Image 1 (cartoon, rainbow over the protein chains, first blue to last red):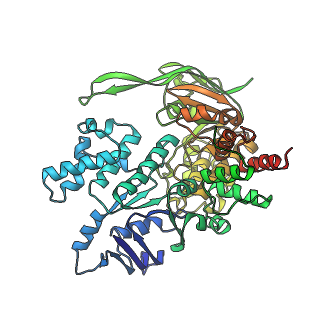
Image 2: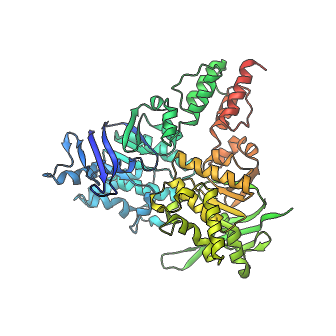
Image 3: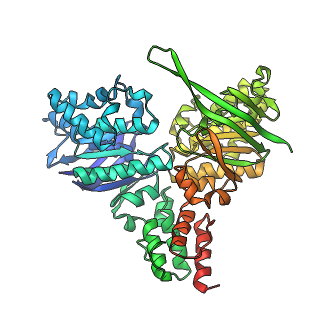
Length: 288
Length: 287
């Protein structure tokens, strides 16, 4: 699977005095199994970008290819339907979009619209619920009687039941407590391992991004400013701060320590790696 | 001692209904909480989702009334109907989603909404709107449309609207949850400024431990009760206890906890990366 974004621009209210370029000449490629972080300040174009990836918005210029097929080909409207199943989009606070009487019906809503047999639908619901870690005993419950974290997992299962090949999550941990956040991210990381789907995580938390993803896209005023590994992106502390972003706290500590003569490699951005570097430096053994 | 807030054995029960709308039971969200907050204090409230912290906070400006016990704001009981508007003027509340709190189409009209409803004289409204916008550094946006602002700017407008009512206390319920890093920084700086320079009492609910580290005192809630209370240093240095409660500590404190397990003798109560740097330099030079 691959998605190729080629020279995509998007202009809101083109031809009026309110014209605003939300995306200008953005190009990159996503492959199966990648876990990508998408960061950028409010209004940087992140939301516009993810909406072009599953054809909710049609770019003003440029094209998006899914496995080599142009999803915006005007002759092939069916491509857009296809892409909305292949690219699953989980919006912020997805639990606000739950609406069915039971958890089962809510998760089955997507596949039910795909002309599948009841048996296939059942199979997909079982698979999706298992991936988000919710047991069968919840099937007949009303989603509105569940806790906030559980509701969010039901909403995620509803998107997974479409069997997407790319999953885009917009701030999936907003409003969750630290434990809920960690559990959700572990689950998302294991989704990638179990299914090989590509995952794009939109986040304002540099610490979460540093902890989980293996590639980062940085948007700034509609342009793709960086597309690199987390370690390489977070070397640009000054530029990121100018864009209203930040670097992980561990990177800040790395800078402070290097100024004081410590030999800490500048690709250390996670707490585990900092722990290891310091323990090595001080020559102490395994954790007690 | 003059208290801003006094919660005396405050409990709050939610009613639970079945699908026919018949009440089937009660859930105790806040359980016999005693909390005293001094004037000018900055208190952060931590706790996992469902621990009762937002329910407790909604008692302060009488959105909720205690099922049992009493909540006093500057000595006024929230159960006293005749005091309710005084209480709501003294204690203003800022919520998580900035888009749900803005009601006017121009920033200064939005800020004026509160003082207008309180019946302040027009010259006073103008004066308070100006002062409110200045305090949150939003003067230059006074004629802007709120929907063109960033998340951090919208939250500052929400804070200005409360300031225009001349409050003594502001309660903020996860005001930075939806903001980008610069928005979070703006809101935190505004809150610190109001607390330090204007002496406004702050009650701050958050899941961001680095924000809580800036408070004078942290209280931690679990199952509707206050289970920990102390300075940020005292609370965060109990890393194992915090993890048990489903919470985090600042990254610097977590790193200190990990290094100590390897036998490195860093202080367990460091809270910032600057302090951690000093500790590691001290260890390196062997003093």
